[in-house]
Length: 586
Image (cartoon, rainbow, N blue to C red):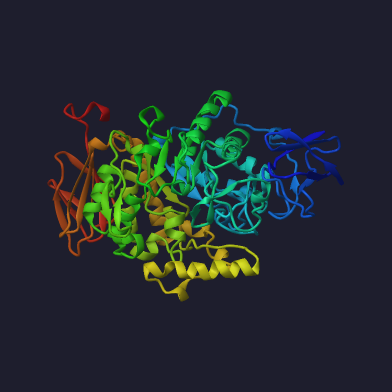
């Protein structure tokens, strides 16, 4: 027997089709309907019919959509999976090295099972956390996952529920924690049937995707419950170690207890039930440290947030780009401020926004923020999906890697970045013809602000756009790709072995730079990172007793206390710990 339950508060009648029969559902209070079906169990397909409509609707809380977002739901029992990670505990995020990947392009096959075969390479690189782009069901075969509609059901072409459980179990077996990107700010446009069941949306607020998700109006208590239950399901039933919340600045919520605070609290409360530690990470354009401030201090209690200001400051310095939101950046002073204070815009006027933006970070450690030189957005939302190495060259991409892995933030690497992958990461979809045409046209129009030629934008609907974004693993051992991979291995090993680099105390970060001469020095305890973008060699006074630990080019030298960098080069010098050094680095 299986009990079916669905929230449909406005419906006058709800019917269930399961096990080959129609069943009348009875009201169970609070807008919920339920029916017990003796013949149903794991593997049973089912659908709902509201009032007098004859449109078969999938369950908004469906755990399995084997025929896609328009097909019937299927009963599955996640608790029946035989886990082998009973003793698993995730490593602390504050000492983490995060690797963001997209299941559909990480391997040629684009499945959970194929991705499992690559985990040894991530572990050997020094990765501690794998962060997955969304894996819940979305329209078609391929896509980024941010247009998902069945938030509880792992995408069938990736391998469905059991494929995902096998992947997570394998990650834990390799010592890798798993973070999952979840999208609670909107639903995708195709297969979005939630609004037929209840007030999941509100016209009180509008977002780039239309009416906002209802987090504060009538019925919002159950909508919030929907998302919180989804978060807890991933943590409990799929053994996920943490969640990354997509674009929380698009949450429209004026409630006394903000949805973000509620979700973070419930995730952390689940730790008592499962005996495991969880983290909640926000992607935010707000530059608001309250997201990662404890509730007792007036914050939302999240564990970390993505920090775009560091990326934008680093990217513009290395590439010289200045279109769109990059117009707010471009100086070494901006990069220095991001390294010392996290947010460049912390109450400062933003020309791009034409308003004052952000709030200062005070009293928080650097490991509350992710630092990266590339991610799916900053690569994939370019016209051609170019990676940093395609735009700035190998030498400057090495500089980016060195800053990313020695900065006071939690470093995050985007798939293939570590070997300067030749494949771009482009935006791709698999919608029906009409919607696909609208998406393709809209994509081209979006890029006008960056000065990109609309004719250069690959068609998101073309299969070649998806196939061309898949990583070529064979190239990792070849030429400059192997050179870059070795560079990342050295940087990660250095970070893990050096207490000063794992310390997130922003007060211990010292940065010096010369805008005219185009060089910057980052000092963290006994470690100094120096890079130069000058057109001729630059020489610095190295700290007394320093040794050259890493150099991005063969012609970097340290002689008689003088560090000399050729153009577009970076070096790491370290000195022995002395009694005068802060005890934190001993």
